[in-house]
Length: 197
Image (cartoon, rainbow, N blue to C red; front, side):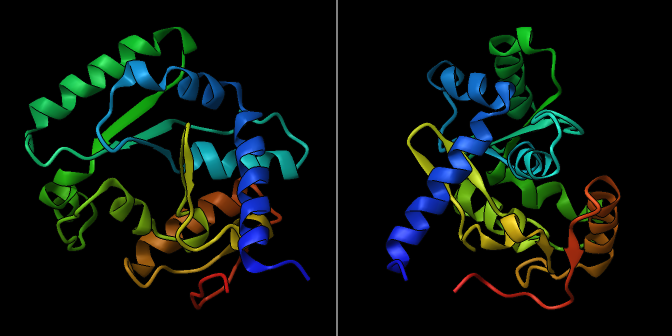
């Protein structure tokens, strides 16, 4: 049996290779410096859905609705500031022809409850936002120099969807889980949350 740190390294290496099989992900990371996002991460569906596509024998880019970028700027919590960052990113990546959503994690608490109907505490970093995705298996982020997977990657590769105790919103979980399972039937829903040991 491999030591835990080696297993983690190998899983992250596999994840990075899978994520880069998606041409859009690869180009976004290739242009990372031009994006100039403070505490920036490429996150969410464009990563874990690429993995599920590869497992299902589909094109890596298939069924991916948008590409999410998180950043953290506590000095500008304005919607206008976030829109300016979005416009810059759109310009840098315009030739890809994909939908890109840029979100300042420092201001999510200002709009989350009015949009989703649940409270949301102020965050301290972009990684705090990744930690709060509705399912532990999908709490993943990547940038050129690192992979962030606070719950490990095993649940992602096993296709296990569970609730996240940091965002225990069953209505949102069930809606999202149903959408994922409809597109990737091999996924399975479990009712309790666990972190990778």
